[in-house]
Amino acid sequence: MNFQVHRSSETIEVLLSGRLEFTDHDSLPDLVDLLNNEGTRRFILDMDGLTFIDSAGIGMLLILQDEAEQRNIKLILRKLQGDVLRSIDLARIGEVVAIER
Amino acid sequence: MPISLAASRVLIVDDNEFNRKSLALMIRRAGLTQIEVAENGVEGLRKVESFRPDLVLLDVSMPVMDGLEMCRRLRERLTHEELPILFQTALDSDEEQVRCFEAGGSDFISKPIKPGECVARVRHQLEKRKLFTDLANFRARVERELKHAKAMQLSLLPEPRELEAVAERYELVLDAHFETSSELGGDFWNVYPLDSHRVAFLMVDFAGHGITAAINTFRLHTLIDRFPMQHVPPSEWLAGLNQALKEVLPVGQFATAFFGILDLHTDTLTYASAGAPNPVVGIAGELRLLDSAGLVLGASRRAVYADRSLRLPRGSCLFLYSDALIECSGPDNEPIGQDGVPGLLRGAMAANRARPLGPLLERFYARTSLPLRDDLTAVWIARRA
Image 1: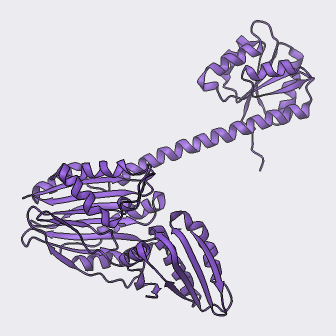
Image 2: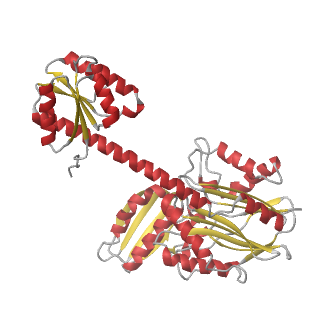
Image 3: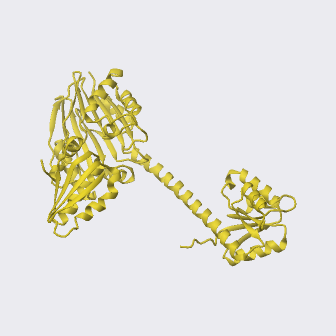
């Protein structure tokens, strides 16, 4: 997985691309670190470029949700499609993380 | 951090008494007290066996048997392949030093012996040996423990005899495959006879694999006994399990699950699912995927689950599996994917209608790279016609 970060005053948008899976756990601290940006209210994960997510990837989303919640930041998943949408819907992640449809 | 070498044993082999004594003195000053001496290669070989040194300081030319020959003979034995052997060679004799290495020497000290260099080289070889043995011991211990843990994990699953008994009792055909991607895994499944006409099936897959996921399967196993299955609908049972798992699982760890109860009186399967891969149901020759959406276990204390029911009459079948089946790929093959499972099963049923699990796995392995990236569990449940 690769990611690009766009910051505006209250929003951090992260564009994910590639596959979000077991081997990506190493980049989780970098993503969590973005939440420490002063003044952030919204943290958007844009999944347009994501082609696959496995259970470890879903675990990372749950961790990010927890970290965001602790800082009073709203985590939003955006532009889910294909297999990624299917996996996230199957696991009903929408019940714990906001998903923009 | 310097490694303590006080317990290391050094054998000095030299035909010159003065050399033996001065070498022993240097080494003793460095804190090594367990020292033995020999006067030639033959005596040296004998002392290697009786004294079991961690290092041999070896002279080259000696009567009876020289150092090169002694070294060659030691290296022929597997047990002394790694024993550090330090030759004392004449300074500037490139040829002799080459011969020492060819005979299997680990390193050499040039004569005349300089105490600082001698102790440094002895220390270096001993440290290397100690690290090597520590690592080898660690590896052996971990392998032993993992082997035991693996046997423990397998004991959480139904034994073939048990499975056969359940199959007889409820007039079913049951076949199961369980395989971990490393020594331990995060998959779990079992079958629970509830009463004379109801039997329950549970399949759980903890995110990730290896030791962490395996520990979670043991946690799960102890939790299951706390929630009787007899008198609650599957959705309620799964919700109870979810709350208990949420208490113990760290954030980010979770499990997918399928829990179904088959009632032979009403020919009904009632199930609740927490994001397990879509099971395949086969009725009257038609195979289709079942809806199995549901919040994964351990993600939220408030999760609620739905009961779904379908008719599962005599002659029909149910196929449960973990996501490795649909996510693993091969060098020339994309993963089978969720939608590919009915086709895979149909092909396998053409080969063996009553027990398609064998042919199904053969087809899966023929297109998949090993070792598997994730744990694989697959369970075939069919009602006899």
